[in-house]
Image 1 (cartoon, helix red, strand yellow):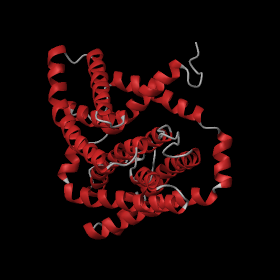
Image 2 (cartoon, helix red, strand yellow; image 1 turned 180 degrees about the vertical axis):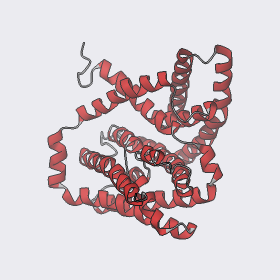
Image 3 (cartoon, one colour; image 1 turned 90 degrees about the horizontal axis):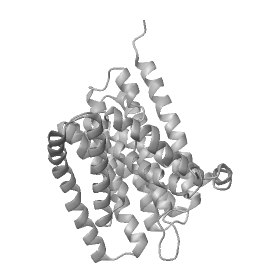
Length: 348
């Protein structure tokens, strides 16, 4: 049937849907109400944990000979984060603590800023820089983003009232919103994954549920999203990743070091400005270190975005470095968080 054939129609469709659903689930994890509750703290930490890694990552890319646009995209990849270790925080019963809520609010900010950076960089790479085109792009983003966040929730609730809230209806309506918003993003020259991210936020606002409906979770997490990861893995040869580490050890170390240093400086400086106890700095750092969903999806899209000369926004070498970054932080972040929680637990 050609299901596992690289570039075949089945795996291509499954992977495209998986990519959209991956970003939808990232957006669905965003709780705007938590950001609003602690907006000052979240704004402070969100800006610092975005800007510092962004500047360090962009500087590293520039020093290694990449263009300014590619450097900006690489910086944005390092600036966002995935709350991969948050279930450990929930298990420890710490999710209501102030510093944890601040991290959650900052996640909203970094994910949105990273997606907006991607939405700006991709069309510039495709068609070249134009002040007028950039202005139009920014205007479209400023109109499209609040339109989705304000209009989709009441429309989604109205459709649930009209057609019922059975599992089949919820899955169908969620997929409808996802595809319409993703296509709308494409129409205003944004990537579909940006629209999928916004759709996730909007659907969560509509339902008020922190977790995806069981039917939607099965559809997304056990069918299409794994297909995206599998298709991504099929694009990358393990030998080329190892070759990148061997041939570009300084680039790999500099990118990973920029992330770790940038996120720690942001946590330390935020704790000083917000007058949080110093013991909370390692936790803030560990939670914001993992780079998985948004980073991987954005990196893959950027590697497949070609300009008129057929040159991708980020080359295979940088993509391999990002894959190493994802592997290191996805494993290391939860391990460090678990160790911190164990150290902080009262001794019996």
